[in-house]
Length: 468
Ligand code: 2HG
Ligand code: ZN
Image (cartoon, rainbow, N blue to C red):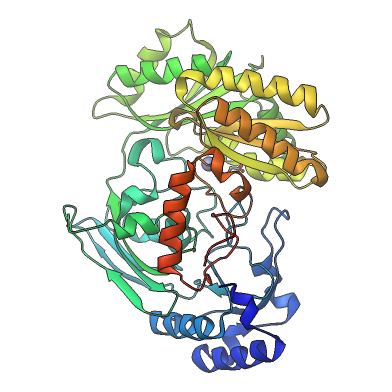
């Protein structure tokens, strides 16, 4: 059933009154100026529309809000820190945005079980800080960690710079509390690493992008922080050299904590927009940043690998892990790119098998030069996971669809994925059939319609619209 078919302005006004009764008037925002920060994403590419933003303060309020929206047939867009890049938290017309930011209680850090139990609105940075107080770390690290929330990273199954070491967000979840479309509260809350009773509900909700339930609380694993880390930035000819170097580092017994690739164009943008300086006198076509740790002398082991890898490296510099000078070159990419594009950046987070990554990059550059000569590509990302962030600058908004289509078809031709870590959201749902078979999509639609029979949860996100 189309949820909006049930509603009209009078219904909306009654619903907003009912929601204000539940969460309190100060937590219902309808003023266009106040809701702007919730209805557009920070890239400026995704702009939505909402009848109101609702900010519940606990699970019972989330439950009552959903029950009221379910009864009224009004769609709900769950939203965490609004740091997503694919429009997954951007409301469709006539929706209510349900912000989870007030669910910000850290309930417990268990240093023996190595877990954290926290509300969906707790930021990644706060979770990490709470873990650090017990000598542990949060396993997910992202440039947007000061705003990205735990509910948001679970809903999008975020990856980030430590994925090569600890896996994605799905790999960190032990328990979850979530509110279903009709307001019922589902709690799969067990601190057990081994628990094989039935379907993996937390795993299913990871990456569900707010289409199945609203996540209210999570129980997540914590990790032991690496000590004595070292970071190398090496200039290389191409991504294949970087992959060989990364393998050589692994073969030496060092643990790879992070592995990133950047291009000379990307480094130039960062140096133009920040205080960062070019790493070497002579530029290289690409640069790889690899962070390593080791149970024995990390620095000596790394220097040994580097001196044996003169065939792969054009230039290299090493610094101890906590000094963030080299990381700045990588972490400033997103903001420097946004600042230097004349149009909203088309951001595609693809992955391809490592064996064809070099070929994919060459083919991509060639196709872009032929079909979109005015578009500037900046490529970077977590290459050891197969993930390249394809950022396309100066693309006229009217060509964004065609441009995306070209890149995604190339990705599919190289047996890659159209979403390595940011999710499908609004940006990529037209292309989901490039990543999944018809039967697979039908199975996902069956799950969606049984969890959300009235289709009120984040319509238009992830799956092509037809559900209900
Ligand atoms: C990162 O790796 C994020 O920094 C953002 O996933 C990537 O800006 C981007 O395209
Ligand atoms: Zn990334």
